[in-house]
Length: 280
Image (cartoon, rainbow, N blue to C red; front, side):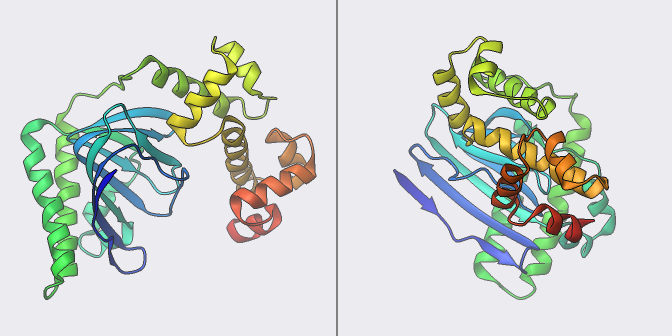
């Protein structure tokens, strides 16, 4: 494996970060994750498999993934092992400090894949490389210039998206579509009893093959993904309702309250009651 991984440059604690990476070899995120800030993932070269919002995407050169805060996502290698990307994390506050109107562009947008037309790619890449250079050299007022470049990037992305026809999500591989359908099925039926064998039978796949491909494309073991979906749904119910923890555990698909409490703490890092108190 050949890597060129530059340091991750930061402005503030969680206001802004940017990192360049070039890699030749199979790789994937150690764990699917979420975070409280926006993320832009731009592929300069190569190809990646991206799992986000219950969908498997094939990301290619010139593609940009826009990830909203708290959206569970992961990346993995495709059949093409060489890739080069720039990753940006930023808060809404960071943008607002430059221009509140630009920050409003972040409202109501879903996490999505944007295929940047070839004619616009050089301009997008110029902005990315300019931000990297500013963070590397840290010349006078560099943070203000990075904010200005970031605002320009968001404006240009908005213009590009408004001129594009609504892009339909085309799956690169039949199993990408199948795994997306299974992830969406789990999300819609989290309250039911879900087993690998039952879901595999329903989607006409062998359990061992489903287990292997699901883990490779999503970063989750099948049973683990079911638990994560259930806990995330339970978190919503804890904040939006006054139902007891016992009732919420049942509505989320858990048969035993002790198992629910243990799983909740493992995934959320706190107990259900503490979570409700903190977010209610």
